[in-house]
Amino acid sequence: MKKYKLLILSILLLITCFLLGWYGDRLASTALIIHAPLILLILLGCFVALLVACIVAIIRHRAYINFFSIGVLCLLVILILKFPFRDTKVKYELDHYEADRLKIVDLIKDGQLTPDPLGNVDLPWGLRRVSASGQALVLQNDERGQVVAFWIFRGMLSGSILLVYSSGGEELIRASQEGPFITRIEQARDTWYYVETD
Image (cartoon, rainbow, N blue to C red; front, side, top):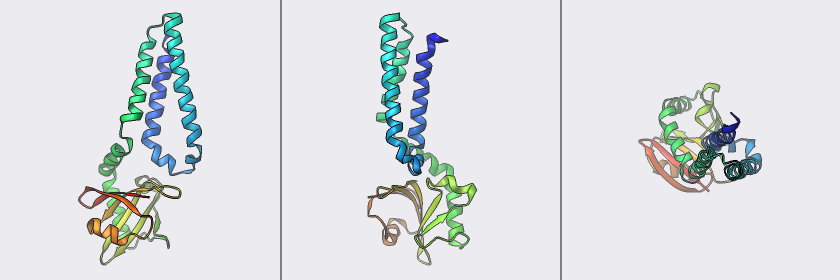
């Protein structure tokens, strides 16, 4: 087992980094954003320590099994640099949570969920997972249509990303916007839009 220790640690680091990449937006939307630099520094330290340990084990002890460990670490670098975590997760959740998000839109339309003065709606416990902050943002809910946003990433002061339901398309999103300036709108499907703000 000792022979495979570095390989196992490399695989665990790969899995940890993947999970942080996958859930990064949700974690950053909470108080953990304060700890993000420390977490990244620890992971970088682990990566460097493992890489050095693998090279030393190969040179000194002729433990060639550690070429696999170095391969896993190279895969980790490629994963971090090339894998589109946010886009992949948004597409997955668009399919997976669409029915729940439409249920929330209907509850808001019917007045069963009411927004606070800023337009935020605290989602019911069983539906909080559909928005990174556990809230939806109601931009419009009247006879002209509905615009309801679900947080993908909720920036502290700026730079938010939302998945927006709009019954009136992109024009209704732009017409109902009162908050941060929209830098990008991309239609995800029928009535769903991917929106970035500055």
